[in-house]
Image 1 (cartoon, rainbow, N blue to C red):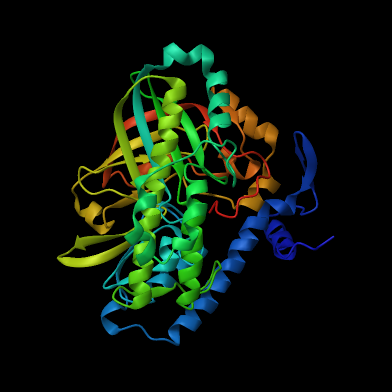
Image 2 (cartoon, one colour):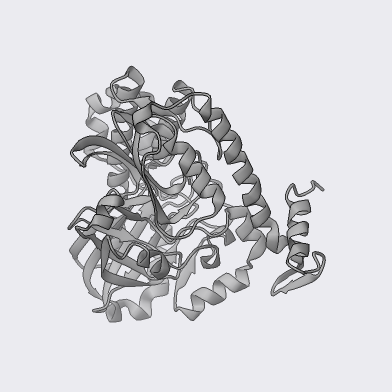
Length: 446
């Protein structure tokens, strides 16, 4: 049996806390767990913080232009040292003008999820990430929840049967979209060879934290909420251009930042924009199919990316603003933000304030992880997860323990950290959730 690389330090932390590291903790439905396992995540984060220090030393060998050194970093909420160190490393590379860590932030690949960086004449491939154009869409129907309440179980089963979760398509319905006829977009992005694969994956949701939610608002009307991105198209684009830029794939690595007017910059931007359009098309397709199952007409719609780079003006400068797991929130702009499964979601609107300006008009994209996927599976049980959902009246199909609500922060607390830059328009309570099943393999999920 392979030894746990964090066990020794986790045991030491347990002793420092005055606990017996070998004392057993009972867990309903699972084998007892030794106390030291409770400290494993802390030991892991200590290691990641040390790794970030090593990356900082590497970055320091390639000095940043003086005008971009010590650019302002606005931090919302509380974060572990490793997340902040990772963000500061990102701010030390390229033409970084300003940065933000949103309250749902946590460690990501090269750049924190919940991290926002504004660049002058540059863009970060690492910052946009592998799931280019990942985002949320929500629509309100004129259907009252009371009209379908007795049929929720059947509806969510139909959703799970019609919509494809995981990698492949579970039905042979042909998906057509004008995007596939835009020859210029496929040529300029150099992604033409992936076109047919993209056709086959349009409208698939994937796994991980990607979902279809059914919710109700304060007035009792049904909403459909979805969260996913560009699937294999975005992942392949990011992988190709990250390699071409000489970047590295990993948690604590320097970000791959490229000039906007370089050959690779122009190609990558075209690929990113193509993947962004693809993401919008996929979410619209899924929402429409779910609407047909439920019935009713759409009376409101909110749709946004949260893994993307936008050309924006801040402080009189034209900048590329790279948001990785962060929702754009300009004054009057609305966003749909989902909590963990079973938690309320919200529709927010950006406000005009000094805090909003300091946030680069950005806010959270979700509740934010407290524990990584592997740690969540060690720490929580299916019984605990199912009990949480049942207590809130949520019907769940699919999902694995790594998406347990206990692995996430609580969304109201996270949103409260941004109260000076956004206001909540609607609170949406979920009553059904569909996700990929346990142990579903999906290389494009994050």
